[in-house]
Length: 326
Ligand code: ACO
Ligand code: ZN
Image (cartoon, rainbow, N blue to C red; front, side, top):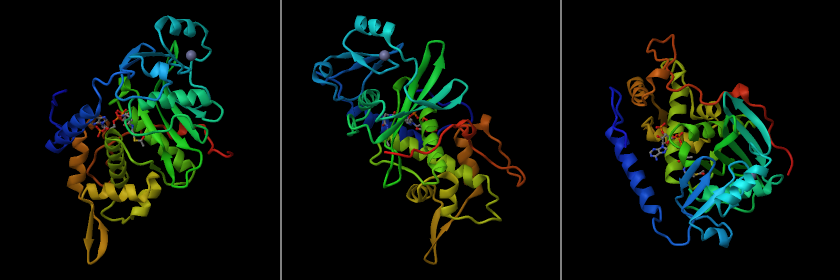
């Protein structure tokens, strides 16, 4: 664990929460289950897996699988992988590149058009998720794969899947950052991207439940920061706004906005009316605790807005139209 230094330290609450999640996740990782893929080789990384995944039986029993990082095909040995890499025609995910900024790209992959790729992606995701997710029935889903580019190609960082049409307004079905890229902000970029798509569709979105512990932590953190950002940009001492305004400004479903505001102690009942109250000092304190002073455009004067985070995704770089069809 990294010891916090400098004036902005995580609070005791943050540390307790981190310890709880860390211990829970550790307990849930079956350390010595026989007949489970315990490691995958993926590009230049060897990754320890967390859970079992329903690979075909002859593969699922092997301790290690060798994956092509571009087409995601799984193999039993390194020589087979090396042979495959000489022939593999992909150097990026199949589908359309719908976003690019610097070396980061996002590709939209249709589960119907690229079935095997998407099935293999789901099998990888299950290695890091303990609850059931989809594996083979990928056709009703779109997959948004984030990559980072170098001279060898577009290397997968993570992805999320999304139903082509969701009755419950789910805008993320399953989200994953590969372990070697975790805790570097990519999860939040993927989450932000999912809401950008929802806003383009003129819909409010919410992730499919249940969330994993890590999923919950990431979403709660993202919702908190985005809602505080929304509030900080307003002159809230003069101008009133509603929960509906926050939903429309962020793309978040109302239940997620309400639970986040409750979590921030910003909702109170006065004379049987639900009132949203913003404490400027608490808002500033929260911003400082997030240790993003370098990114802060902080001013407590009325003329300049307080923001606690630069946009993670640049909406202007999106080349996309909502899905139509089956
Ligand atoms: N312990 C404590 N906090 C954590 C941890 C951790 N291990 N991992 C992430 N966080 C916090 C970060 O600190 C950050 O909050 P902060 O900005 O307030 O500090 C927030 O979560 C997001 O961090 P990112 O770096 O943006 O997220 P990351 O790239 O690590 O991805 C994700 C998060 C996708 C949940 C990743 O942990 C993952 O793939 N986990 C395994 C699969 C999974 O559980 N997916 C979610 C299932 S729920 C669903 O799919 C709808
Ligand atoms: Zn390949």
